[in-house]
Image 1 (tube, protein in one colour):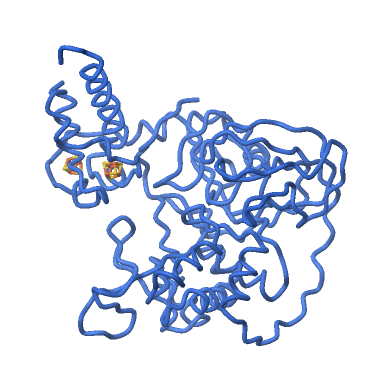
Image 2: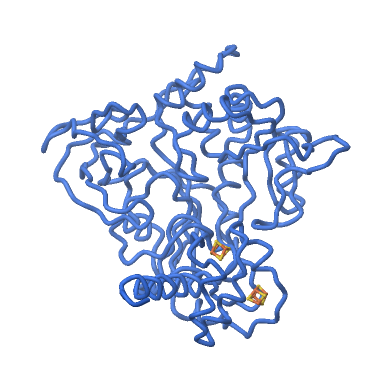
Length: 429
Ligand code: SF4
Ligand code: SF4
């Protein structure tokens, strides 16, 4: 299986977007790390053959967001170190699941006036991690409280060519996502909020009926050029002034916040899109964290062994060398492609449209870096500051010629640093 970034794909959300979400609670085994964060010290709280219940911490730590909660009830059968493409090296407990108990009958939620602190505490207790950036929601809320957030946007603009998991959670739980967003806005101190989408007419209309027109904002394009709010001095619906700050939260995090506050549920599952031309039955699925990619793909069926496996989401996700990887917070799709699907989009020569430079949030000139690198003008790369590229993938995504700029800039970056190292090592330099 090949590993690279910046793979360009056709825009193809069907058929997964049209199908109901499959809810899989009968998972045989999960692989869960003791913590997601490499900079947090945790001590394992479970031993081999221990039985753990859903919602109990697998570790202890001084950092409240450090330990991971078990997403299932089951027995610890072994321990494993996983090289996770999004999180790095993780020490994990392997848990053989006991048959899942049926979800209890949930009481109708009471309209409780929660305080900002209660909301932050619930986000912390439930270990909610925002799928947009992998940051604990409690940390984001407290940060907004401290530094200000005028407008909070639930970002459901589905940026990826194949992904529809944000739509799936809105279709199934629009009211709960909306209420979760209101609670997050209250905790963040944001006076206004809405859900940003980029949906076809029928889907948008059905959603607007449920969340209200004021609660929904249709962007005019997909990321990275999409504006999640209108910026204007004049004011009006869905508008911020240039001086106001906008916070961004994932719709799954909003849903998890609602469930934590009203039903006391931990954040232990997610919706992800399983798609790609190697997948027999593309669909959105809800699975407990720790379910392996292998199990997800085998349940959806594979037409043939994939040549590319893309995890996470398309802009910041990455290709994975193996299927033996657990689904963890922040992963909203698993895409499996054959060589044919990737080869069918052939790159062409740069036409100088400048879009890659427009979208680069580091202010780089990706096309120029690629040109100098291609022409082997290494000595002139330094001025272009390729080293500040963080491989976000935006330039590759927008390039109309299908040029994999992200990979080229990454190569140029390493070339650049090699040259600098050689110069530093040279006593005569
Ligand atoms: S991948 Fe690098 S060069 Fe391309 S847009 Fe992102 S930061 Fe800029
Ligand atoms: S987006 Fe692609 S075609 Fe346009 S300038 Fe950049 S590299 Fe060239």
